[in-house]
Image (cartoon, rainbow, N blue to C red; front, side):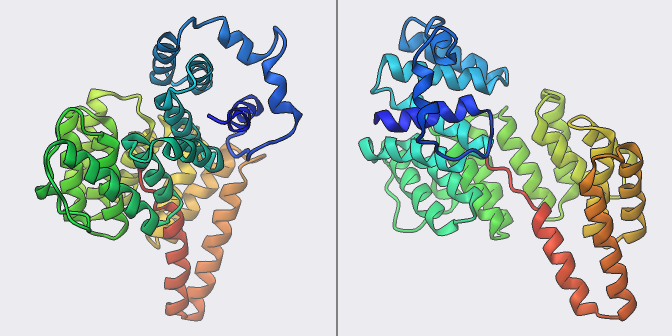
Length: 347
């Protein structure tokens, strides 16, 4: 990898800010000197690129993204041609919302290996999170073509239906999960279900794929299927945060508010849980219930919970619109709120 690119990636880690952009100043270069530099500490932990990759994978599974990122960088220092390490660096930055740094990493990999399946998939997922569907579709299509070609299957110039595809244990689960997300973004729920089922063929116990499938059922209004999928995945592993988030949305949408609060409390404070339930009520147009939950959030955290104040202001605006009888305007306001909460699972 080019020296300046690695420096940017390391400096972003040291800054500790998920939204930090590239920094070409001296701070990035300073990490290579001194016993107190974090990168120096990492150097003392791994003696080979393979060892660094193993330590990085363990740290990632444990949720220690800083340590994981350092170890992948260490692997690149020991073995500069380890493009798989650089893909993981980009993946971690993407999951943290550092889009510029993620794209820097994936672009560097693809410049050297244009057919790198993992980098194509990750760049496609990054494009999805940025709502650039055309770019995402092109990248994912190329990745699918490569995976299918490996299995002796040729596909055309458009993305094929799920039933026309083969997968095996070498197929990248994230690729087929991303195809499902792309279909969900276009409300093609039968199509997305097929892609998620392909992902589950690759790894039947994948929490990512189960969560994506459950959320797709939720979007399609298949709430019983969604609940069954979420519950099965939570029974398997109750520590996966996105599952609790989406399960809470489902419970709130079906007016099971106490259960929804309990679900949201698995991943946040009671004040945050109350605000989340209130937000679902707001999107549903249940203004009295929404106000109740927002006020509850304020009572539990009055000093800093600005979000609840903002949502209470939305309630007041909608009430005013209803009083004026502007039904068309009301629909427009609710649509804006709905767009804010409709977050598709791309990780």
